[in-house]
Image 1 (cartoon, rainbow, N blue to C red):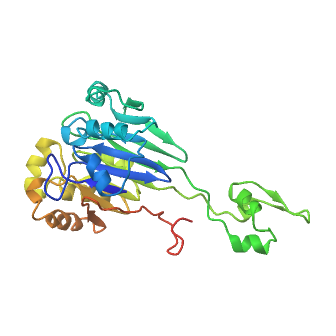
Image 2: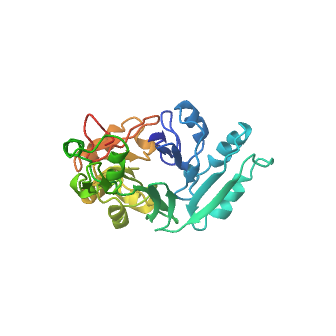
Image 3: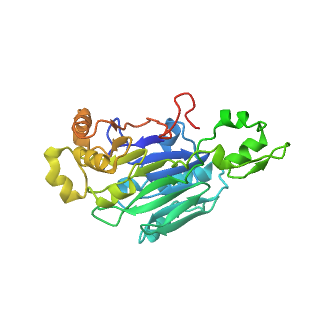
Length: 309
């Protein structure tokens, strides 16, 4: 995960407006695309191999960068199709933005509308849209991996005389295997209980919401907007945003492993640590995103010496 823009509403010297790159096993997603995102992608080495762009809502700081990004991709000779996803009702605006610039794009860029509960499917995972509470129709997105097989007991397999190689893989996939001496070894003898995949949640702009708690339950990482501190609680409510303490309470109530705050108001440009301090008073495993920061999302049951078992 690479944060390309972590400011709210307007850029500052150190923060661009909203965009986040999320890569899973070679498939690259872009979550929101504020103005200037294409330059941020170049600056921070993300590259333009993105296949899906997911827009949370039609406020300019979350989608105006699409026009420039698509034109840059076209000028670079891109041929692979691109899919743009957004809440219902956003399609007409995004298609008009896609077609700005006169010349036809060199690749297909299709716009698709999503309802809460619908998902973009992938191999071994899905990106599910969920309802958020902003001043206009908006969605958040949760990347949810399929359940993984249980941990394979290599030592026990060797003790049973299972030769290393393809038979290990078959047992781990749930198949029984027959050994040369006629014995049958079943997966239940060597494979532990199924383990959850990873869950990463991105809210976009939202007030504190029970739906965010639901979709974030036991998430490995929650990226939640934190536009204001508690001093501006009234303004946060009026504008459909959250305070840093709000985000921390959501993380605490959902039992997430990590919280990352983003969408920082320009009023905190000189003192962003104030947001982090407020959040950590409620939920200690909180971090404050900055432009260009990359972080990996590990499995909850990962071995320190083997982070991807």
